[in-house]
Image (cartoon, rainbow, N blue to C red):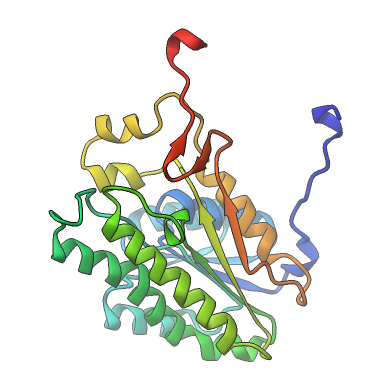
Length: 262
């Protein structure tokens, strides 16, 4: 089949008008790309994160709203919930990894910080917004997980433990919300080129090496999948979506092309 003849699967925009979507971690990377994708699909968007200056520029770009949010701060979460009111879709994109030490040399404080952001942060925001989501009658909880939620690799003990926790949290929500008009989806990407590796490894040089010799996923690639998931008909729930670059089979097996091979 020629590429021009390949089928496309655009968002069902008729399922978006009148619905409001809030995205955490929206100041950069997958979160920001998701705000753009959902706005393009017809959602009213609320971009939430700590870096409000970035959020305001994004909100102006898409015609949405910006709100300050630190998912590790209960008072910030409560203030956000009071400001936004009822929403229909929440995309839990706030998260991240800190360090790549072995378990033997792991920093307990770094592990706690990752857990607070990636797991407890989802808990706080979910608890604050679920009552309003229920009132809408067509709600969707989307949590950004990772292949680290069901795979492991050396140097990733803290992050994989945390993302395994995210995976367990999402699966539990799916059971606890069964019978209610609330869909639950986990999006589990492999290698995505964002600020993730820069924050984790501490230098641009180290971050660039992660993606040497391959084409990783982009934030937009992941955002497109999220937009697709939340625009399915109300009876369709994509429980879990795993996406990776073609050059990645799993966390331990990546095909890299040397410059001499190109």
